[in-house]
Length: 152
Picture 1: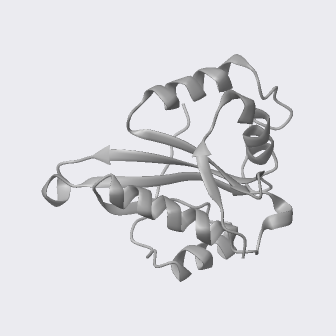
Picture 2: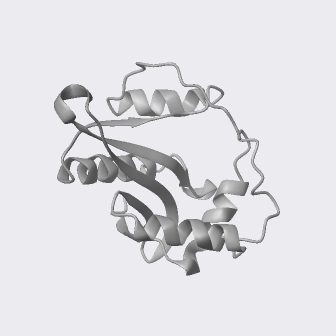
């Protein structure tokens, strides 16, 4: 298995990230066909980069981009003022799926949350992604809540 390197995403990575978002067969996404360097993407990246409670990572294998994910670190009053790590937008290039890259990425994400003082890591996954659900359960995640969204 190839060992991955991780780095913060830059504006030069936006086409790679937006292509992965748009390639999502399950999500009803407005990212399909969008200009990856459009102002909303650049603005979002700038906001993520400026926020000390956000990280957007690129995973590389042998200097090739193979995946991306975002981490958010959320303080809360529950659980004695615990911090939570939230893993979002996990994507691996199609040709690398099933090769262990996702496992390494989630392992890195969990470790990063631990280093930031989080006592829990959480994520959501579309109900249609039954393979992803098994993947996360295999990594130790448990189904604990029912999620809801309201698009504005």
